[in-house]
Amino acid sequence: MTNPIVHPHMPHVAVASACLLGEGPVWDDRSNTLFWVDIKNPAVWRYHPETNEHSCVAAPERIGFIALTPDPDVVIAGFKSGLGRFNLKTREAEPVIAPEKDKPGNRINDGYVGPDGAIYFGTMHDDEADASGSFWRWDGKELTEFQSGFTVTNGPAFSQDGQTLYATDTVNGMIYAYDVNDGRVGGQRRFVHFEEGWGHPDGMAVDAEGYVWVCHWGGSRITRFAPDGSVERTVPVPTAQVTKCAFGGPDLTALYITTASVGHDPHMDPMAGHLFRVETGGIRGLKANIFQG
Image 1 (tube, rainbow, N blue to C red):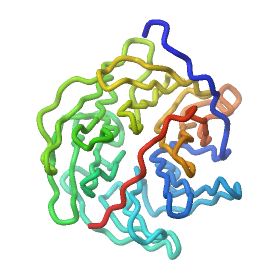
Image 2 (spheres, rainbow, N blue to C red; image 1 turned 120 degrees about the horizontal axis):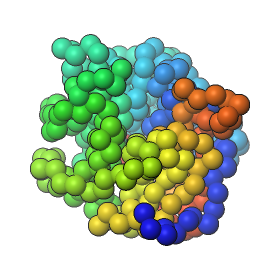
Image 3 (cartoon, rainbow, N blue to C red; image 1 turned 90 degrees about the vertical axis):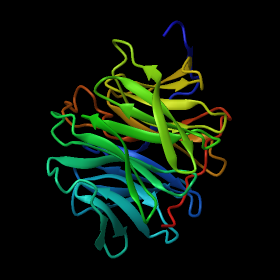
Image 4 (cartoon, rainbow, N blue to C red; image 1 turned 90 degrees about the horizontal axis):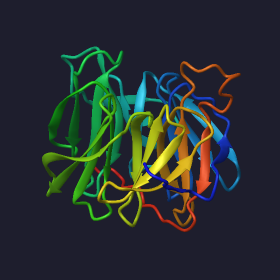
């Protein structure tokens, strides 16, 4: 990374949530609400920037991500045991499908609703010791595995034209790109390999120009990569474990950033686990897709 542009705006704390493992931010433009999860202190958080109100709903088990559904109070949750419908009002959870019943040491991690309406998500070894994780696609009827052999998965995310899927092998510092055609995921190719000293690639978001914003676990920043994998800019974040980002706000020009406090001394890293916000300077994101399956 040679003399990259440094983003002119600094992230600030939007919600002092102090999550153990904050993850999975998603903006619901129907209610101007940001959702995110705490994986290891299982909960779904909600934040309304217009009123500055926030709340959280305890989840029944570890939860890696949520997907929006036509009912704003019901989400598809990536629970440890599998995908499930989770009612945020009643707190009732209904199992939908378990991709890896034969792997009790695994859990679902990150996930995303693609432009085709299907949920693309990854599994990982909960203790981060075995390469037993995979990437999956679920359209409400059919569950398909499209890549395996990962210790920690992150992403996936889609390009603005819906033709490229990005997915991350966090432990090995590699982000892959896949061609997608009518729900079929093609072979992988290298997109970005993290250099020594960058930390590890974690969650990501793609903007309306096709650039990929990747969070650095252990690297205290986000990098905006061009579609060819070159570095366009970096966004410093005032805490070490940066997990995922999502575009929000009425015009999708605010970037919300989740972080983690797990394993960190709060006296040394006092902002760990908080939700951050930074203005993009006019760069627009993509509206979150709603799972209809």
